[in-house]
Length: 112
Image (tube, rainbow, N blue to C red; front, side):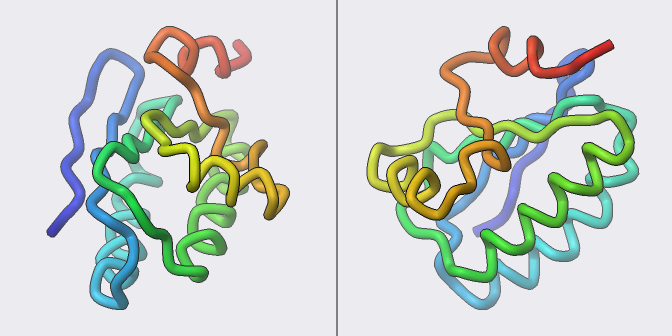
């Protein structure tokens, strides 16, 4: 149960485990500190394995997104299941999570 990351051109691709335990929230908070130092302009969270998200994860990722934007970078998500996407929309966080369907769509989010 951990995050896997891969650099691909200007992309930091982050494969997420299920985000529904206190332990994974602590790991996420530590990982974000390292991801903030990444030179990548796009941080793409792959939610393929995510079925549930603890409430505090929304806050953590919202803060991360804000810090990225302050530095001209973006955060996006891919492979969100419909239930999670609906939950994100209901919470008014679609602009934070920026769901995309493929890598090229994520790359278009960066404004040069």
